[in-house]
Length: 481
Image (cartoon, rainbow, N blue to C red):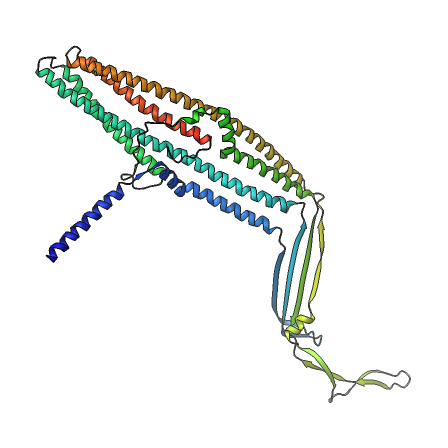
């Protein structure tokens, strides 16, 4: 009993693992999941985020320009060989050591407002980098939505083709019965069999198109498991077209406030203005303050006193001219001692140096003037780019609005055509079953009906995507359809 129970539990666990593994492989992605995953894993977005990090570092550099510099220095040297003994003044072969310490500071007091303008520019550069990232994310979102809708289109197209082929197979069976009953000639089935073969080819092609569209989206998401990648099956019977009730001018106004292309152009214009201000600052005087502290110590012996030389207590320094008597003086010898403690020397030998320094630019090979002119040219270019961006956006929004309206009309016309073709095909089917018309006329009506179904699918998803583009310009994120 125990072995039997253990075996049953093992089999149940094994089945659970297999089923759960199969379920995991059958995960279907929503559009929101696709967009979110693409934005989190896209390499271009990650590279742009590095540009944002670089802008943050540049801001730190700009802030650092307001801070004083502070540097410490130290030096210890050995002099070996023939050197003057600083104690006796005699040249001797000896080794001496010296230590020196220093501290220097410098602070910019006034630099023609270049520090302030550079800092403000660095803040704008961070905003510009963020706008670039947002624009890239918008472009990726549009690409993901387009690829997602392409999968849905190919899937629905495949579904329709399979339904059409199933109907053809049923018609072949029905035609065979009519032939056996002697209602229609045997040759009428040949056209249907040819249609069946053509439809099966179309199904194979549609399956391949569906698989390729999945690969395209999976690559956009940078997924490697193409075969197990699939998106959520949704039947869009109702299409939200409220955006078409908005006036194009209203959409343009919203787009100018929302679309990153305009924000980028406006920020680039502000950056160019600050570049001119920074360049003009080079023509103004600069004022800075400085301070330095230094001290030193020596490891040489020093004279600490004097004593009478017992071996030679006096020294002749001259003679009296009349008597020729020697003039003598006591002969003292220096008492040599070691160097003072190093910290005592540092305290005794230290010194301070401070003051102000002004620099007035007079002639620098026209470099400052030419740099100003160069940045003014860039400023004018940024103005034109902003103006062009506004014009392009207006034209693009008008085009998107008209495309959406035309897509709606095409979808409505295709739907009416399909409904009419469906009724006509039903009428032809009834007449075909009665043997009133031949298989060629029946097949022609069937093909027209099938083509109308394909047109409805194509125009529907074209309409959906154009609506998403228009909603995007209106400021609605591309997260769901």
